[in-house]
Image 1: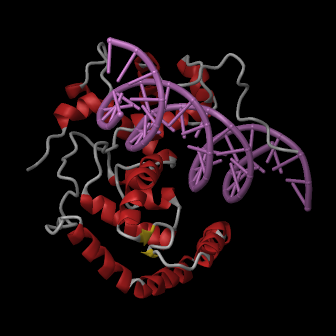
Image 2: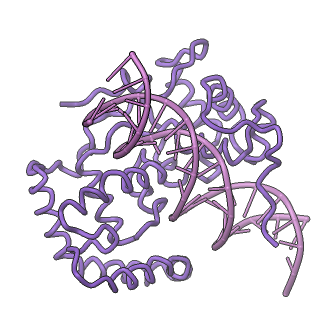
Length: 256
DNA sequence: AACACCCGCAACCGCACTATA
DNA sequence: GTATAGTGCGGTTGCGGGTGT
């Protein structure tokens, strides 16, 4: 007996979102916030399921999204975090403000994986590719035990931290490998992590709580939304709604 | 110019987890 | 304790644009 579908799919629109739909969703969230995703499409006048609306908001419409190409330092971070966390994209995304799990996952699968393979590194183990195929089984075992690991983390975050530290200790060599990897790739001039990683300066942003707790209702409090709306008003005409990437194309200029 | 192929990305699907009645 | 609804997450798919022939 499986779960019920998240919604009745009959009569619902699927596929790419139109500008009008984006506008409707954004306007609704700005005015009302989010209390129940299932109700959002109904109240916003969209023929979409709540899940689709949520995904669209999180992956595309969210105001704090950085968008644009990943910088070397971001890729670097992703590789490090993947070595520690595996395919837990949402956890990885939590360390990269302005990036979504979906975006990181896509980037990993399309670019980083390939780069690592080209350099003779196994993307799943982060180690040089060897002649021992059994390694895959070991990695696969560890990656499929995430739910257990997650439970442990939730129960005892301190223990989890210690374990991660230990893993970090064991990845010193790995890290050294990354340094060499970047040099090999012609990225000898590493960017200072304390500076804005990709050279972009956001034209608007919400407070830090946004990055830390997208799912929490506090984020959707009127103040934050109003603040964001006020900022958006200065660059975005609601009469001629522009896709976010268009806003960023002139709102976020490379620093150098 | 037309076609085939490749690649990147947005969106979907289904399962897992959590909250609540 | 159990059933159900709501949400989050990771894997996968399919479309569209770019490139090669």
